[in-house]
Length: 153
Length: 161
Image (cartoon, rainbow over all chains, first blue to last red; front, side, top):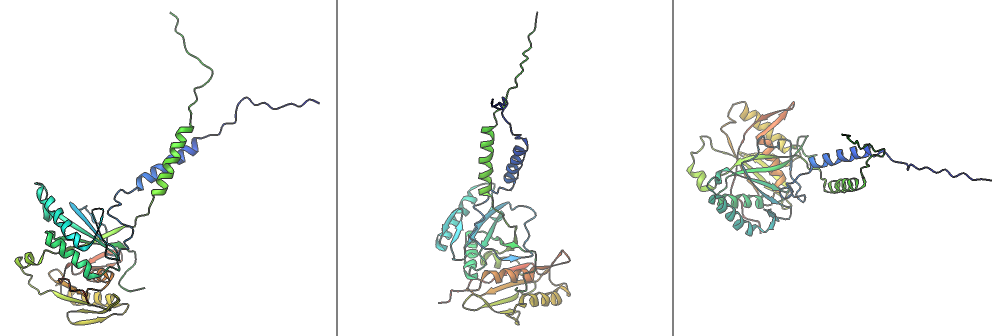
């Protein structure tokens, strides 16, 4: 008996086009949602929620982010600092801003991201240090909430 | 002259494999760095240092004093506005807002009024933000309304020993 082998000269080719389309779509999506400002938004901080906390209409001219975790660690300019070290870091920052002819201390907004369970006194001390360094515009940052936060759940 | 056309029967095949490799790598990279960022917003407070504030023209109305007493654990113990207590119940901040709406907005005095927040050292920062929310405004039927927007803090108190 003769066995006939099916010899296909042409290899079975998969149609790649839809897969590549989808992959490019995914890449485009992830590229758009990628955020580069990770230094300014530390994930350890659980911000207090408020329904009135809306993103600013125009971005700040000179934002300066100071962050404070629940255990009173201060994050400033990518470093973890103690409250004592923040004072000198802020003074240095103020000196640098003063040294630029086109920058003014009054244009700087200090964005304060403090954890919801941080102590108010510690937050106020940070504000006081910023005032001593010459900054006087503050933005207390909160998480945008859809429901009213006035009545405790 | 005879022009030769290169007519070849076999097509030039593009090698897809390296491209797909790179595309998958990119995809995996973006997938791992993907992080959902919740929207954040700000309360703007202008607080010059004490010396500069004294030099500035004083407001005609004396600031209202919002006292926030703290329990040792950081919980809110008492909320008082200009001597009137709102307790520490679940709806203390809602009552505070209701009081401000009836007392100041009706009189049209909310624009010049200033509120000074006097919070205890140990109080959780969350309560301060809720107090600021209660005094600065409210959202009704999707429309934001403004109440008292001028806020300042008293100098920080000493840490309880």
